Length: 150
Image (cartoon, rainbow, N blue to C red; front, side, top):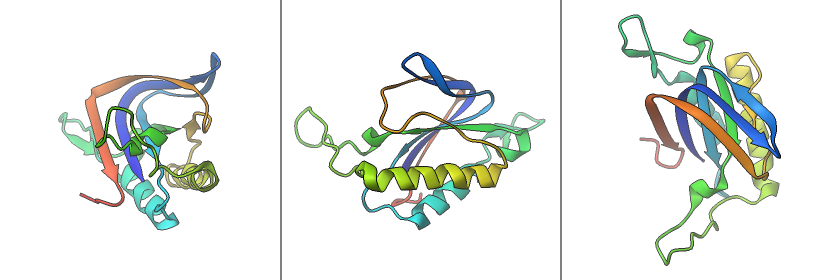
C-alpha cells in the first residue's frame, strides 16, 4: 500500500458535482493498493497514519497527532500511485490491485481508521471520476509505502 498524506485545514471530494466527503482540519489521504497488499499492511499503515505527529503544539512544533487535535480524515482511493513510468511516456498500472482485491482492503481501511480515531472517515467513491480539493496546511505532505517502511 502507498499513501500520500496531506495535512489540511480543509478538504472535499465531489463526484458529479455532489460532495461525497468533506473535512476541516486533519488528513487528506490518497491510498493506493497493490496485489501484494495484505490485511497486515493495512493495519500497519492505519496505525502509522493515526500516530503521525505532524500537527503543531503550543510552541509551533510538530508534536501532535490526529487525536490530539480532534482531526478528521478524507480517504480517497488512488490506483495511480502505482504507476510504472520506466518505459515510455504512458504509465502502466499493472501493479495496482484490481477492484475485487482493492475494494475490500479499502473498505477495511475505512473501518479500521474509524475505529482508531473514533469517528466517521469521509471518502470519495471507489473508481469514480472524483474532483478533490484541499488546502494543504504547511504544506505538510508525507508518503508511506508499506513495502519500504522508512
